View (cartoon, helix red, strand yellow):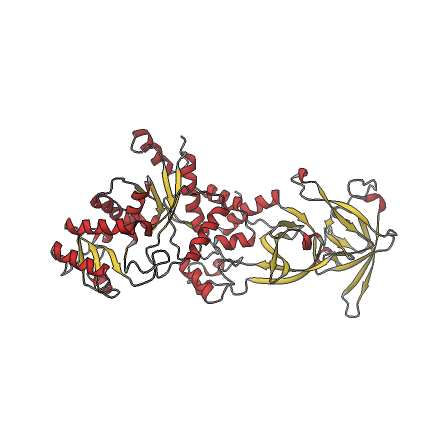
Length: 542
């Protein structure tokens, strides 16, 4: 099978040599927060790789730190995966294997490959050494097997307080890889687990539990991000020395970083707890639930992850590149609608009908979607940006004595401007060209400008929300999150909108003509329009 990245090259070689006879991956989040856009790359890679090779992908929850994990996060993660359209083969938790993980730790002790250490976390750090100097052996490193078994049993039975004792793997304090210098593999932690309750007061460390859980699930390729590359020797050591029968392979890839987005779960949690955002699903948040709430299509997110590919070196992607995929998808799939901000009233003086119903193209890119009906009458509103008393050169929108086409309606000419006492525009007096009806135009008048409008008699008032990103990376690249925060990232205005936008289904995506892409939302019992992405594409396709 043709390889698209270095991971697939590895898999192809292993399949050809008979090292593996299939592909079994897993997506392994820790349920200590909501997934963000960075996790989407791992999701697409693990599920996508399994699908390409007719294999399977598990959902695996790394719940080895009960002090930070919640069922709320488990449920949110499952919902996000389903939103992206992925289906896991089996769902497992590290806690499913706690008994086995403990038994294998006992085996390591019996084999003389693990010992109970009384050093504090700070003392362990101080004796670990540096990149150029070896570590110092713990004074408890040579305890007897019997003593270690007794102490480890007492740790499990709750005799010791948090941090009082740990179990360490007995490897090599002079190893050039600091992760191999007798790493901690179990610690005392008196915390209620979201699944096992108070059954355990000792919990395995991630680096020890992870390879065992991979093996127990039958995983062939443990795909993880680049920061775990230096941990791979410990992953392999655990597989070899615990004696598990199945031996998966760990492969690392570069994580996804995007400008203007907070990509730290810890800091995202702080934003929520500090009230800087309205929650994990705030439309400004880069969480998958936030992106979904903003209206980002799952298909656009997956297309983005597919296009950026898989690399071995970390890099940063411009936010405009991500927006490009959102815009491309919505341009083809979103309905069109008309919205008028800073409305100017237009009276069509020669229109003597009670009104009429016109056809409006739902989506010009998808003729099969057909048309919907819009009401036209003698009085309409146009956008304040579409009229000028003092137009610049090559101004193709409405001006006095000028012509413009109303979208899917008629050509109108501005005959007069009525001003308020303060000099602002009160209303425009216009005439329309009866022969210029869209689709039936025989007027011969050529208009370069086409503008949106709404019927003054049937339009509704609606709140419009626009969002900026939480980080101002252009001005403050590389600085601390607190210095890069954009605290003025929500902009609220009001607009006159087609009545349809107040009666259509919630969470529908629209291209508001010449405004951008928005979705209908209900907020505090009120229907609003919230921005998904701007109309302008700033991504340089070259």
